[in-house]
Image (cartoon, rainbow, N blue to C red; front, top):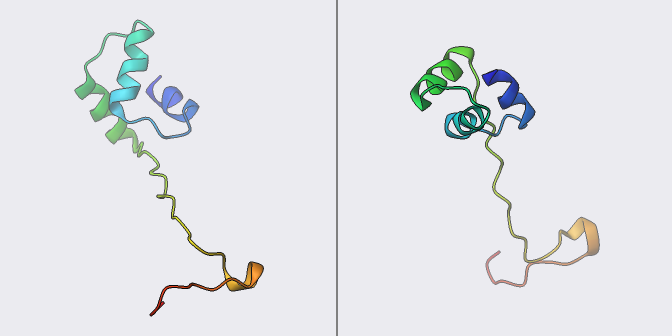
Length: 71
């Protein structure tokens, strides 16, 4: 059941969220048990990459260049 919740949420839910979903579903278990079972099953959450801001467009796209000195 833990694996199903984890996969259904695109591998982004950690043990706290998985526990919350299970608790709302009526499954009685502790967060520590969910954490231990997830670790034993090798379920590791996916960490999204941070979004990078871009002040200028690349030279290949539109010919813009960075206007900051030294860059």
